[in-house]
Amino acid sequence: MTLEPWLRSPLPDIADELQPVAAMFIAAKEDIIRAVDGLEHAELWTRVNGAASIGFHMIHLAGATDRLMSYAEGEPLTDAQKADLAAERDADEQRPLLDVLTEKLEHALDHAVKRLEGITSDDLATARELGRAKVPTTMRALILHTGEHASRHAGQIVTTSKFVRHHD
Image (tube, rainbow, N blue to C red; front, side, top):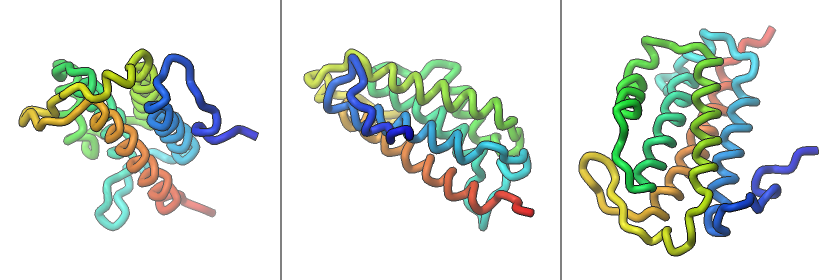
């Protein structure tokens, strides 16, 4: 039996306050991988009652996780991150394959866990700015939101996959 990620804690080199966020990233990845296993390409891009497709959620989750973690680190977005953001807007037209989306998602969530390493409790109160509008926030708020955001989209992917699967 595999334990839920939050029961596998603590992860080394991650502050106690950030252990739940690391578990959120790991759980989101594992839940999504299970939910999309065996999906057909059409199912990946099906929009149920106007809701976003699984493919969109996957590409957005990967990109947003990377962008939010950069803001948490006090870094501006790179040209590659800006290009990924633009690609999200065209995802339903471009319709990347499941293996491409899965690789991008796994990388983003694994990297997010790695980025938590070495952040101290004292670092969490550091002032940060979000986006072009430079909305004032803190490292703590950005990291917590990033974990919550990943969990929310993982839940949408899991639920939507149940609606779009074709059963014989």
